Amino acid sequence: MKSKTDLIPPIPEAVQKSIQIKKSSGEQVDFSIPKLRGSLLKSGAAKQEVDQIIDTVRDELYQGISTREIYNRAFALLKKKKRVYASKYKLKRAIYELGPTGFPFEQFVGQLYHYAGYEVAVNCELQGQCVKHEVDVVAQKNKHVLYMECKFHREAGRKCDVKVPLYIHSRYQDLIQHPPNVKKQTQGWVVTNTQFTGDAVQYGSCVGLLLLSWDYPKDQGLKDMIDRLGLYPITVSTLLSNREKGFLLSRNVVLCRQLLNDRFYLDHLGISETRIKRILEEVEQLCDVDSTLH
Image (cartoon, rainbow, N blue to C red; front, side):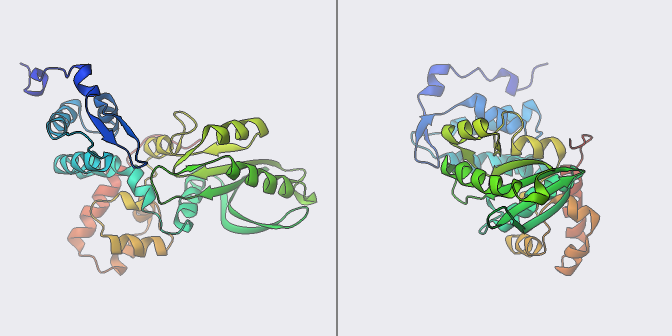
């Protein structure tokens, strides 16, 4: 027997393209149901649940609606079905919430590589051949050393242009020419929570500087790494208040997984036992993955 959602007729492509939505950058684009469906399915919601949400959102569309409004509506509907769905769906927004400074984002990137088996140091001052440099993240495994510069942006739609990898590459070259570093296997990285311009990607590829952004490299960007491995920032939580998240970030607790290892911070916040149980249940569901980080 077919469900009610199975009986919903498909939306003609012409109707989909007739609705223009406004991105955070101000750009007007065609509304795409396949794109919305893809982002909703990544939350873990079942196809039937996703179809129900799409049907509701579709009925509330109007010309010029912002992507933020569409996101907020979809988020609220997911939250009603299951909080962990909403947590995963808000991942991109949660990365922005690691601000206002860039330091929590540096800590977050450092933790990603800590769970990759690297020895990690954050916010280091290192001597180059000519001058000293501040390096956001240094990750080392055996003789393999990653020098990583993190570029955090609070504004959605802002991109890292070619000036960023140009500048970072020159610093990286000075670092690896310092005699103690010459024999090490090193890589220079630029990591951002937003996106790179085409010129930035082209330059990085040309000089061997590795770039990592929200969606680059394809299928291996930050969003893919986080979803695949369950290394979610604590800002995805739908149960923690902004004040509580701020307190945790100030104590360098940037991953939900860190709360599983030490609930002391939740006790210190004076959170009730009932809420702590719910928060940890949410965290356990987010971190429930079988993959290992490579």
